[in-house]
Length: 141
Image (cartoon, rainbow, N blue to C red; front, side, top):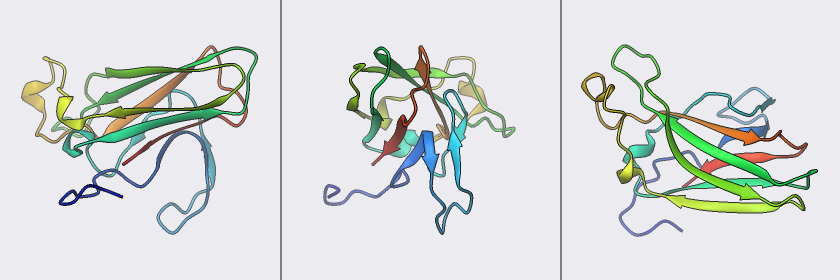
């Protein structure tokens, strides 16, 4: 349950890597891949707190997930990518969660003059050394 007085600012589950089911808000069933750029419907820097959730059922070795975010520039393009957090999932598989604060996000110095806050509408998760079958990475509120 969200804290009293808070507002849901991040989609219930914004999938960055993995399978997306057909739904009323997303009419396309598909799989997002590692490092795919995802445009969020709400800015991360407006959220008090959000969570990175990463999982996989098992792999040949440990899997590292790097979450990066970028601002929406005034001209509608993607700004400079800012690394936000890195988590590791053991080879045996499992689920890792990292709580993050949107108020700690700041655009790259070169983008400051070209953004209107809140501005962090883009995210991507990169899995290394490879993406195991069944891997899923998402942002939740």
